[in-house]
Amino acid sequence: MTLLRTVARPMLASVFLAGAVNALKNTSTISPKAKPVADLVSKTTGQPVSPATLVRVNAGTQLLAASALATGRAPRLSALVLAGSLAPTTVVGHQFWNQSDPVAAKNQRLHFLKNVSVIGGLLMATLDPDPHKKFIGTRAKNKVVDAKDKVVDEISDLRR
Image (cartoon, rainbow, N blue to C red; front, side, top):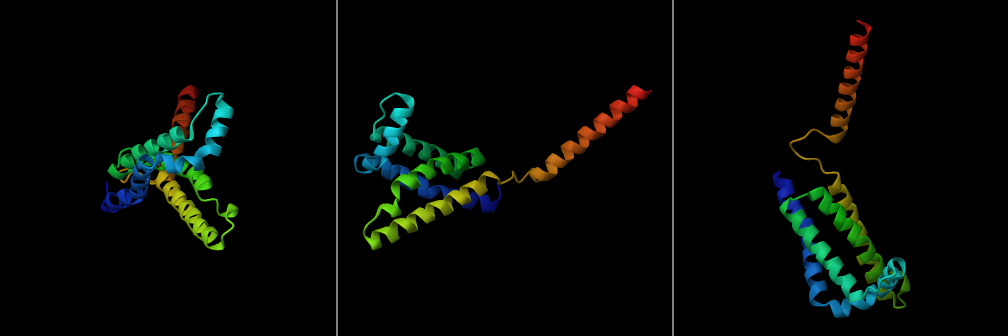
């Protein structure tokens, strides 16, 4: 891992680690916001799902994925999981469009956009190449060239 990755990945993961710990400590105060999602999951699966369970599962997912990202274990997959878990959290937790107080709406909009920005950063992290490998486009091009050369060689062998 390069120095930049060694520093950047834990920095990106830190907000998820702190948020997950907070969600696990304060499940009862956070779960009312998750009720619409819990109702949707219950309706879709036919199984009752409590908002508190959903909050705990999301926190556990974020804790595991953030730990993996911070330590450089499966960083692209970890970033993708974090982006996937942050999207519904953002929509449910920062509904600025439902705020009647302009100050609260502005605050929720700011947090909503911050989370959208973090999702963008996480999606970029999913594309982060292994520093020991060539860029994925170059690797793909080389595979195509190798496959073409193999086909040409086999056609040449058949003509003999």
